[in-house]
Image (cartoon, rainbow, N blue to C red; front, side, top):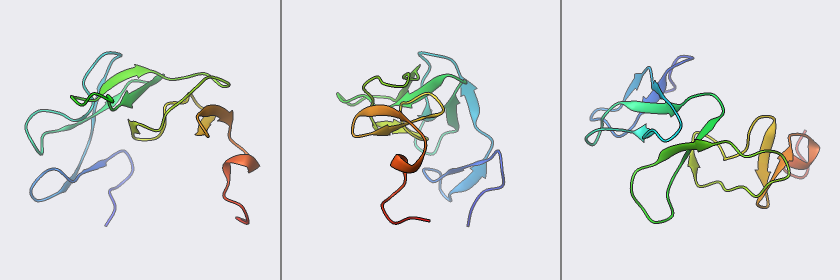
Length: 104
């Protein structure tokens, strides 16, 4: 099933459950925090939850502006600031280019 609006699925918990996420600032730890199955934390507005290439805990980093290099190594979306979306490593405006070919 799916969770009600404003709730997220904590699939790391046993059993999985819908819960309200906590909000953390830049530099804060995000994703599943605490022990396995711990609460879910999302980044404050203007930040994205980045998964470090070197491993370790995901942290909140500033969202990336249109035209800048981006990554999809994030939780809860990509690294671009709205209304951007990461296409081929660059934050592009949302629009027809962001849609799969042939989509209605």
